[in-house]
Image 1 (cartoon, rainbow, N blue to C red):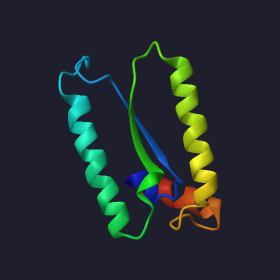
Image 2 (image 1 turned 135 degrees about the vertical axis):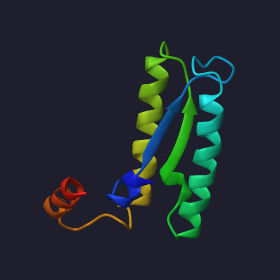
Image 3 (image 1 turned 45 degrees about the horizontal axis):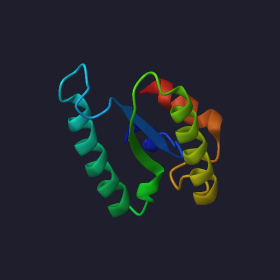
Length: 98
């Protein structure tokens, strides 16, 4: 959520394949957190499609590239985040102050 608060247009969360996570259930917890965050975004009037989780292995570089391309097209269609500041220099200053 911090990325959105700082004006990010979208966020990709990449997790291990289900059932194949070194961190045991970390990807399952992340999946639930992403679902909750998508609900919070919707309730705040921000498109939930700006946040997406994908499960893939480290050997799937081409798949990751496709995911990034898909997300980039989606965010271009949605336009800038309603939380984005008009002055990027001010946003950087604020992020360093916190």
